Length: 329
Image: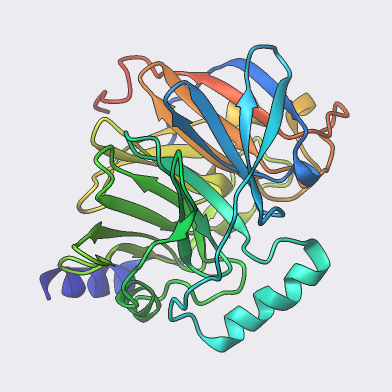
């Protein structure tokens, strides 16, 4: 009840338009075009042991292991057998629109994020179905049994209401018994569930944050204007959540229990350099992976070219900020 009351107050007090304070700038130390992905739709990154993995939101039957030995990375497709998707509680209207969209763009499941636990199990979130597929190192892939309370509480809090704006990010703890979801936009939010004996369920509520409103794009963005607050991925590192906030061109560190922002870092100065820009009037970054030495940020360019002509998806390596990711403001 206390969390629900606080959440309701936060929603009422959320301003229509927020201007983000200046955040320290991160520095790119390398960039890696990726060959071999379907349509350039790179949608998530995960480190599983020594291997880096990604997914495409246009592929339902495969994920990709990235060969990172050269400057240009090669995406190696790994087939997965996907069983029928269980019901999640999404309304018929959202499910039917996703089904119709799959005939146009491909990808009925719309995989948007991937994460791994310490045992090497890979977890992939389907935006179209608000479901999570577990792909173990050996054996068949299975859908997690998730309580319908997840979707029910999300929608009651103003999340998962817009088509193509559902779960965009996923993170799991090393033990593999708690995961966090990032709801994309209009409104954006962070949610968590824990593994019980037979089902993944809410504990004192699923919704950590539900947040509406607009914020200004960075001044370096061509014809900068207010854009919806959004999350395009989430990464768990050193006991903290790190959110990729695409329209604001920033990464923010958040508390895992309250989702409260502790500090943000901008990547606008690097990715809005003229040669790295795309013609779209919004950010395209959809993959985040934070580690002790820095962060990987991946672009879902949908086969579109940057100003310099690069039409493959690109993964950028950023150095860790001065003082590390745990530094206080």
